[in-house]
Length: 388
Image (tube, rainbow, N blue to C red; front, side, top):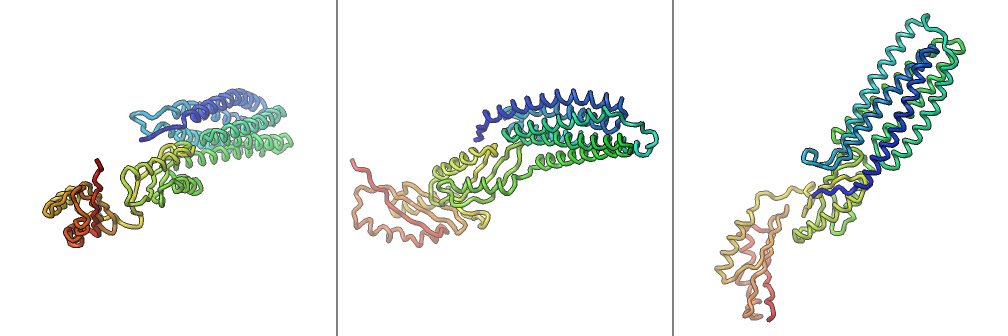
C-alpha cells in the first residue's frame, strides 16, 4: 500500500514556487520592456538579445507556474504515483525553449558580424540599462536559489540558475557595450553571440537532465547509500540487496529486497518489511517504497523452483501419519536454495505417556520420511495438550 505523507511539505513547496515565479514574471516584464526599447533606440544588438532572453524567461516562468499547479495533484486512477514528473517535463520544455532562443541569438549576431559596417554607434543609455539588469538578475537569482534549496525543488533550482545565467549574460552585454562605446563596435555583436551561446548551453543542460530523469535515472551513489543504510538498520533485516531507485520529480521511487531469518513466520516477515518501508518513507527524498522479503539472498543464490507444492506435500504427509496413527496439527514448509525443510507439529495426545513420546521417532522413521518427500530435513514435535 502506498502512502504519500509529504503533503504539508509539498504544499509549502508549491506556495514558494508560485510566489518566487510571480516575482520573476513581474521583474522580467519590466526588464524586457526596457531592454528591447532602449536597445533599439541605443542601437545595441547585445541589449536587444538580452531583452529577448528576458522574454524567454517569461515563457519559462509561465511553464513553471503550469507545472507547479499540476505537479502538486494527488495520485489518481491515471497517475498512480502522483504528478511529480510534470516538473521534469517542464524542465525539458524549458530547455528546448532556451536552445531555440540561443540559436536565434547566435544567428542574428553572426549576421551583424558579417555586416559590421552597417552597425551604428551604441548610445550610453544601453550601458545603464545593462548594469541595472545585471544587478536585478543577480538579486533574483540569490532570492530564488535560497527558496528553492529551502523546499528542495529541482525545478525551482533550475529556474534560479536560469536567472544566474541571465545575470552572467547581462555582464557580457555590459562589457560589449563598454567596448562599443570605446570605439570597438565589433564587441557588441560578439557579446550578443556569447549570450546566445550561454543561453543555448543552459538549455541543453536543463533538457538533458530532464530527459535523463524521464528515463528513470537513479539517485546518485550518496543518496542510494544513505537509503540502503536506513533499510539495513531496521530490526530483523539481515541484509539489503537489489536496491533500485528512479527519479520522480524531486523525489524517488525505491525498490529493495531485504533478507530476513528464513524460519520466521510470514506475519513477522511482513512486519519487518512494513517497518523498513516506514523508515524509507521518513526520508524526504523517497516518494514511495516497495519492499520484497527474501529468506535468502536471491542475488547470490537461485531459489529452488522444482520442489513440490504445499498441497501435494500436505496430502502425502497426512496419509503417512494416518498410517502410523498420528495427525498433524501444523505443517511449516521452508523452501530454500539448499532444499526443502519441513517442520511438523503433531496434534496433542493427552493420553500419551513419556514412553510413547520417546518411541515417537522410531514410529516415524524421520530419515525415511525425509527421503520420501525429497526434503533436506524433516522434524516432528508434539503439541502440548491444554490443561483443563
